[in-house]
Amino acid sequence: ALLHDIWSDLLNLPTISIHDSFFDLGGHSMLALELVRRIKYSFGLDMAVCDVFRLADIESMARSLK
Image (cartoon, rainbow, N blue to C red):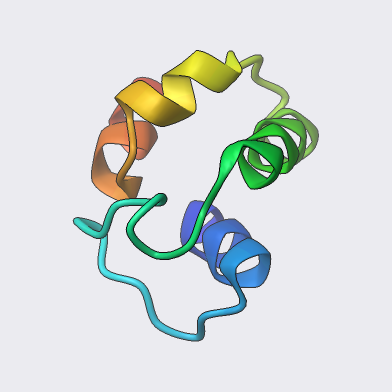
C-alpha cells in the first residue's frame, strides 16, 4: 500500500493498478530518480534507477523490495 501511495503521489493519479507501467502512466527518468529516493526514505532500501525501468509495475517492484 505504501508503494502504491508513493507512485500515486509522484504521478498525481488517485488510482493505479499494480500491473500499470510507471512509464505508461506518465513516469519519466526524473520521476524515477524521485521514486528511488522515496523508496530509500520509506523502506530504508537502496534501489538503482535502472531497476525502475526493469521493474516498471508495482507488483514487480514490491516483490523485489522483500
